[in-house]
Image 1 (cartoon, one colour):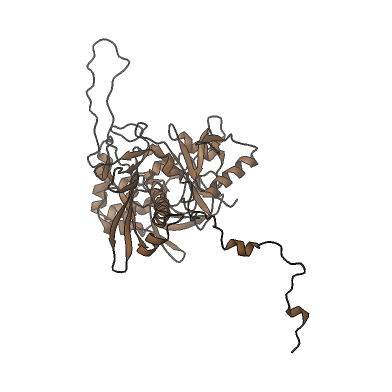
Image 2 (tube, rainbow, N blue to C red; image 1 turned 90 degrees about the horizontal axis):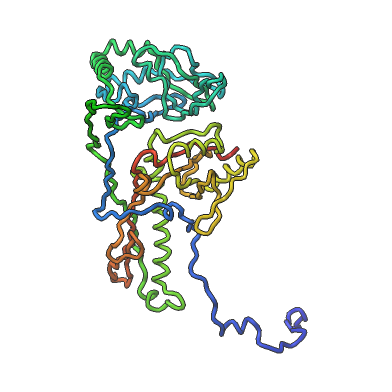
Length: 465
């Protein structure tokens, strides 16, 4: 059997020293600690002032505020047909405390569905306000006339909002023009239909008369019970007496918990600890994951999350879709001492594009040794926990923070048994019959908005333009 030259691997030159492959067998590899892609800056956790909650709950006491029925209406759809949920009609001020679900169902069936194209005029200033409008889908703008006759934007409304509810109390005149910004679907209730229902239902008629006959309670522009004061007088007039009324059922925030059980085999914990301790590394990554979940919950939890607890009066719509400097000005102007904005990184990029298109280049500000994008000197922190919808829209949060400023505060309980970080502890559970160590890792937290104007949200921010 012949052997070809190609079958023989012969070095052209003999090696004069030990090769790297052989040397590697005697060397020690330098290793990194385990890396994790899911770790983010978590600016919200860093910038919220954290308040100690020793009893597991935090009560927010406020002055008495009168409810005016400024909630949002919910709809259901079947195919292309949209209907309002009857009980949701209680969000209208005149129907807030009406309890007859049967009458509300009959009233809901009288709403007429109508579609509008972008640019259509829905209601015109100076014309009779003879119907109530519920916005099932889309965005509209409220337009008025300025002092010198020019058109001015009064605000925007979107899904779930309503306007024209004053028509339920009697004939009125539109004080503003409503124009569709996007294609819209609205449900309309003509005043005549409401009057017919009012005439047929004795409970409804009695409720309307009772509401209209009650005197409006004295309140300040923010809806709080008025504190009677005297000023500008001279001599010795009788001074008004007063007291500060409180909410009788203030909200309490209970600390939420995020937990997991970390399992490690004793063989791994005993033998494989050089140069890094396996238990420490497992705990480190588990704690990082819990902190990421904590920030997600502070924003998205339906019970206490910021996106769901922002007062409806502090939710505004963009003027044209993308986040513009005008929109952020509107957001800042609604509160004093805005500490920071919070937005998805893609939202920040969209705002940067709008600034560039206008020839604006906002000065950055330094935060913890890093230069951050800012507007009006207020830093804009990135947070990928703020969701982006299927329609490629998102939200921007603006907040004032701290108890002394009546702002937004984080809640935790420091000093837990076996505490690893403030508000987070690691407790040894047991060793199973399979020789597996178990550690219970828990984080306790919540967030509270002390007064409504501490938190504002710019909604339906378009990212694709």
